[in-house]
Figure 1 (cartoon, rainbow, N blue to C red):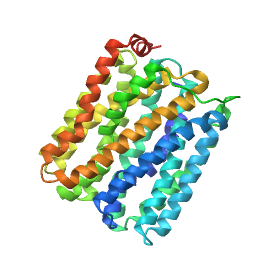
Figure 2: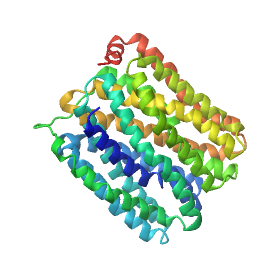
Figure 3: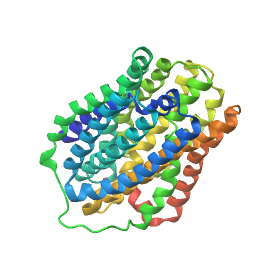
Figure 4: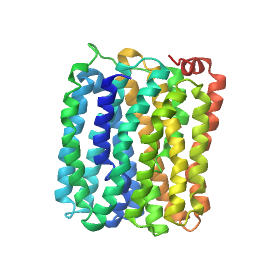
Length: 389
């Protein structure tokens, strides 16, 4: 594992520590500021549209401008918007919503560039799995602390301060981005791509899977706080355990998966996601919530590096940014779909938790079935997922 991968992991850790202060709570913050569930659904729909545009644009700019330049643009843009949010949060909730949507644009651009630069450094599916696993360790070291800290910050100081702290943490990570300038890479010429067929097929179940993965945020936080009356500060423990488990286990699991047939492990992980979220209807207190998040995180540790590594392994070397832009587009649509669907479902199924969580978790079950079918019928996709080194 190169030292550069460790630097990128540290960078992602610093940014995750900041952004995890706000990400799980955005929907709840908007709700507490006076936004009804239906309007929160519109917010997440708008976020899906913005993420769609920014992922495509980010993929193109990553190849044209270079990975590091776009990371700087995305990071600095996020800092400016978050500072504006801090100063204007008491002014108007609609203004806050617009600013958060703008921040999503910059953050998506950063994410595309930082994922692409890993593909420039590592070759082969097995090495990519190990590299993305290491980066997830860094990111989740920050994720383990952020939601726990923000739960107490919001409880004692108010919502605005989490945006200020996030802005300062993102600003502090800028020198680490500048240290990567020696790795800058861009293509000399540019033309729009048409992704290959195996990649396009792989994205279908991946979007469904990310729809269930997207429940770790607005759906989970709001359900536990509004329906089960679990305090925000206690909900932070749920996210802290999620991050801690990834820090401790992700590297080991990544090394294990790099030597295995990842097709079946992707199916297993998808099924774990389905079962873990479908069981939420029986949860009544923070202790049960912690047990369930341990199961959710097990699925996350398995599938997250696999889907990224397979997507990168399918990309053409001179068009990695655009391929990762398309992958980011689909994954963000999936995540946002999870938030949009959950915000709508809570309006009609809030008194039927069993039906609510069965409907929200079922996309992961469908993804597992489609993955299995695709791996069996598409030989080219199968060959790409067997390239371990």
